[in-house]
Length: 323
Image (cartoon, rainbow, N blue to C red; front, side):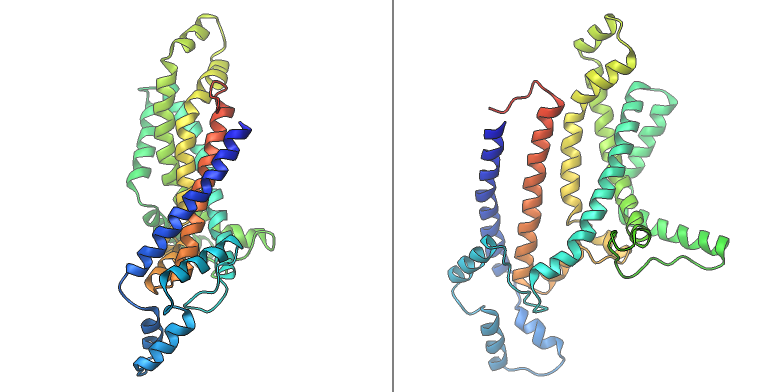
């Protein structure tokens, strides 16, 4: 196992290097110039000389190979440079939003995992009963319902209910407050987007849990365990659930990595300034340095999540050995 983990960590290097080459080249192929956007945004006239000065300040006039190696050298030293659009350090720009996106992703993953495993196992055990039909209806509705639309319904419901009960509508906090500063203010802001995204998240995982459990419950070793007279609770928890969780863990890991940078519309609905919104803004503004840093961050999250999922495989199923 130790050798396997070391090999996977070493494979991170070519993976991230390939992602770096792709994002660097693809960004340079996008039409548009960040200097033109910045100068045109002032509303005044600018000539070619001003454009050339801006490009020289941002280092866009140098050869692409020189720009690439300077950027890679900075990444190796955890120095992503400054944003071409805001002229602020990229570490600070990402750090302000990373903790928000991470907290929402963790809350959504935690709530979705609890809901998915409990409902999926119950649905499989009570197959073709009214409980199974309700769980399947719950999961199908979650898959069909976009999280941002559910977020709009949550906001409208809170506004109407608080207006009726307390006489004034509830308003979501605008400024993000870290949980270690004020837990109540923090949760009042992040709990609703976490539930909105976690519902769809749980719907996908619930269907996967149900399908995996039904397949495992038909295996010969489950029938053997029942023939030996083991309690049904022991059979489900010790023999069936661990084997059924392998594909569910994969879905949970992929969804968690997606939540770190893919909640663009949901963040817009709840007025959250997370990584997804920063991603869209940097691409729209042709902010090469910011976009490159965000792509590398998301790639690193996906690689790390896959490694954790593979390690959990061996813990859940002792028959799995990585040699």
